[in-house]
Length: 257
Ligand SMILES: Nc1ncnc2c1ncn2[C@@H]1O[C@H](COP(=O)(O)OP(=O)(O)OP(=O)(O)O)[C@@H](O)[C@H]1O
Ligand SMILES: [Mg+2]
Image (cartoon, rainbow, N blue to C red; front, side, top):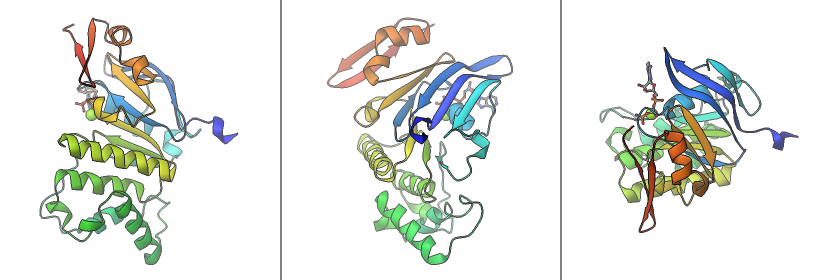
């Protein structure tokens, strides 16, 4: 009964740094194939949650499972796009070489034959819309183009779970919308589960299945309307929160503590 096993399962997870609780009793499950947006302010613990999911950090208490296995045993099943990708303008790599870095290593270190490798890279480049600049120097591309390459590098090894840490930061509205739309399409076509970290819920609303909201060491998961409302967010933040809807956009105003 594989379908019953969540892609990501946090059960009563505490994570502390020193005395500070970053996550307290976080309990949620993400189903295979779901697209979940992780929303929270600076320092809310969004990147920490991704690192726990990858097994780079261990919980102080509770249990994490990725497709039923401990995170450390998930070699090759997770693709990751870190926060702040920065390519040196002079890095001597073409876009396609940068993407190819994601091929090996993902699969137990057994190198792919070059024809197979090339077809994986071409498919990933096409999926993110990077074919037109595949042979340009990666470091000379725009922020939005580099973000597409980073996603291609993360999916080229055919992961089952894709973790994206603020892929929309520093992008204008239309580039951000393009990245979200592209990610959602790839996830659907390749059957990948996605956790995408963002500050703002708006670019994700049309595409995500559920939102995981982090505040105050607490996590709440659900449909956007279930979570992004004054009751739920005021409880999560432990103080009055206003949720305004202006011209189809959702604006969250959390008062001072
Ligand atoms: N290596 C570290 N050592 C000590 N504290 C850390 C470390 N990394 C993060 N923190 C602290 O843990 C908390 C959560 O950090 P995290 O990076 O997960 O937040 P975030 O939600 O991703 O924030 P941002 O939106 O700024 O990226 C922050 O208060 C941060 O200062
Ligand atoms: Mg972060």
